[in-house]
Image (cartoon, rainbow, N blue to C red; front, side, top):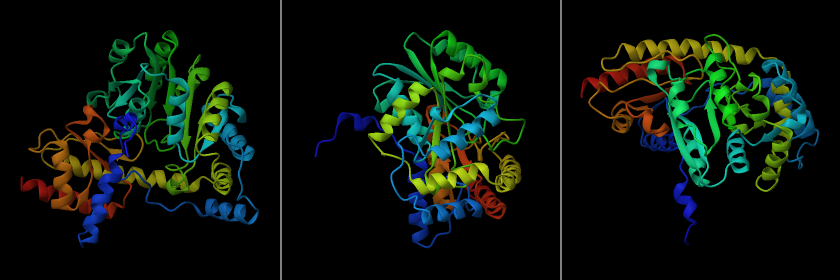
Length: 387
């Protein structure tokens, strides 16, 4: 069978490949500490699970509207309006099975072949993958350690061109844990407006912030109509396997994105959507406890990594990742990823999994217990001492 040429341009998410390698080693009897996968290790709160069970009993087992059930779209619109301080209507919301479809559908709807799309690098690998798949030109915007993994606004000015159609930003950020300030967002907004650029703002980690507060570019004057806000339930509510996400955008674009959903997924699972209503409108104490625990783990892993010779690690302001600099070690990022998995039994990710500017770094997810993080740190230090 001959595949379409476009399949050669489609990337992947390396975390799942490393997870598969780690599982294979576990099957051979080796103990692996998983710091590679970006998934909360907490259970979904009980009230959300109970809501899904009730929905099944109440008959939410059929097709729903492609854009999402009215109850969830209303809950999302109210939540975004309250937390972001902007007026959002249910007609601006499209609910999808996970947040990734919003990336795909937004780019499909807005970008033609040959258009330029600016995206953060190192960044979530699916951004670059989808841009390339569509035949657009992926233009990386380097996130810099010396700027706490923000970027130089002059760098952004230099790479915007008449062909720039779309820009992706992510805050809090995967893989670095960096957070864009309100001042950063205001400059991005100024450039987006001046150059007629649509912005996809990936805010899936917006509730996991340790320093200050989360800011959305959608709240900057002039940006509400040109921003696509991406969010979901996986990280905030430990609902990764439920596959529930959404986008908030202008009504005309929401109609087009819903058409793309009709042509692909038909709709999002109905009883899962009703669980989403409970997640938003129910008690939030589970989220608060999870974030408090993540902050404790962050401090443990940052202090532990900085105590290891040859590693330098910034303290992230959000999400649940650290992105330590390993340029003083004798192995490169990809070699060190393999070495730590096989020699230390610690699964991590090479910084190059997140783009060319991730070279010289590793990503650790601290969505694991303090006990396992401390054990991993001991193993890493012992393994590196052998190099």
